[in-house]
Amino acid sequence: MAKIVDEFYEHGLNNDPIDLIYPNDKEKEQLKCAVNTDEFLFYSNNPESVFYKDFADSGKYFCRETVKGNGQIYTWHRNEYEGTITSLILMYNPNDFDIELNFTNIGTTIDANWVSDVYAWRDYLTAANNPVKITLHPYEYANIFSRQIPAHCNFGVISRVSIVDKQGNPAAVTFFDLAYVDEAKSGNATEPAQASVTGAKSDPHRGVGAGFYETFTLNLSMSSDEQNKAKVVSFGKDKTTDTSNDGDSFDGKDLIQMTDSSGQITVKGLAGNYGVQMDVRLNFTNNTGSVGNFKVVMSSTGGAIYPFVSLDGVFAYPGRRIDTAKNLMEMIDLGTIENGQSVSVSFFTALTAVSTAPFIIGVIRA
Image 1 (cartoon, rainbow, N blue to C red):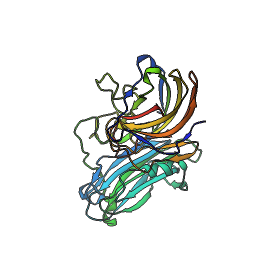
Image 2: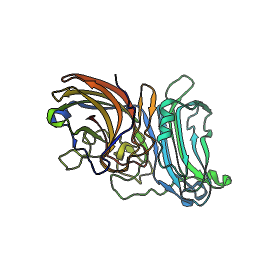
Image 3: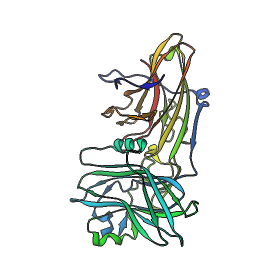
Image 4: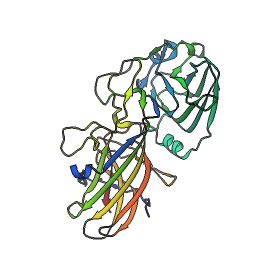
């Protein structure tokens, strides 16, 4: 039975890299990705570093979008103002009837020394924080997640949200992600902050996306000539021209499609799929010719990464990041597998903030 590893061992240290083997064209046909496009992603990560010019004091909001029904909020910024700011999500009911907002799976980040949102993901996946219910009357404003953010802190929110009318039908709401220095100027936000735009697909995104939850079915096997290597799948980046598939094993089809209503960001595919929950169903077959112990590993082909898993309701994080691209962190022990035998495991993960895509998940022979 699959379990979280007893020790988070990192392969590739001391200049001892492991070769990565990607699925061939026939094996790629066994890889499936399904996106919950019926639900929204309110996403705010640009501008990523925020200054006084980006605050409500200067008439700006980071992101404003109207959404409807069920979805997720994901925000991530860094306060580069030389002082404390107030960060919040402002809500506006554009309807002529009452609406109810239910926030669950709430995870927040605020730390001067911590650069990832991995613990926000822990709270999100374990539902560690109490849910919040808010009723908005017609054309009424209210806020949630109001927090004081010291200078040079990273800060953000991950939360599920449902918006309904009194009959329980999906309803619309307008969300603003904003911050201010002076509360008296908190209502000045009428225009979007200038996004950092280079036109590159790796630019930080903002806007609303079609889906925040992806289900991956990964059927992988390891042959006799692959047993000293890692069999891996890559996620979260448009496929490059590299024939090794060091881009995206789904040819970019797993990238959430985003729209920025301000029109400043025109790239649609959410680079890295940061903030997107991954439901991974892995089926692994040992075709090496002999019995062996196999483990699920995580890494990035781009650079640093903060790997985590949620397996059977238990959240596990090594307590450190991987600093080098293609180093592999053992995360799940699949146990001893006979030759020809298959083992299945289902778990949740995500690519955290301040990580680098493409994200990879794979299997090694321990």
